[in-house]
Image (cartoon, rainbow, N blue to C red; front, side, top):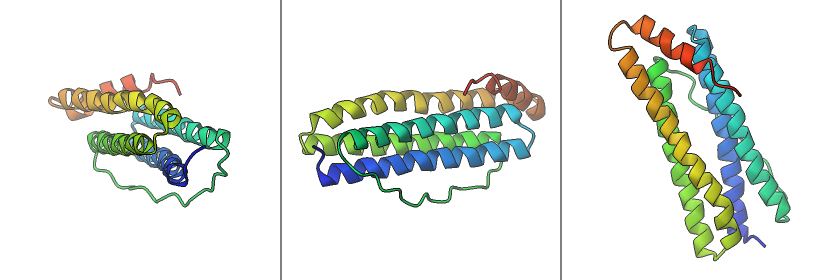
Length: 165
């Protein structure tokens, strides 16, 4: 059985995953508004993935007899200066999510809740990819725009359009 503190922490993380989806939909909208449909595609796919993460938390809580109460979702930032800026903000956001997941792992250890600690192990592994992907894209963007910015973004946009979601 989950402690009240653990249940609240997991519920809060479910909300943060929903916020991430909301953030990424805003980023997709920004990308669409500046004509980067590949970037838009990538962020829409990322938003769907974040909703799947939220669902994992929901399912775990329900399986453990916790009634999930939905909280308000914070309004995400809506203004960005470029495709590079969007991915730099994505990277910083994912680093924050990683920190939040590690806080939950530490709480599970304090609570001696090995079942939840094991559940969170999947998210710890997932966050490695969640940080590595935007970090790689940032480097690719920087290399691509070091010459002609417009053609550099076009090349990256084409690559990002290939993501399935």
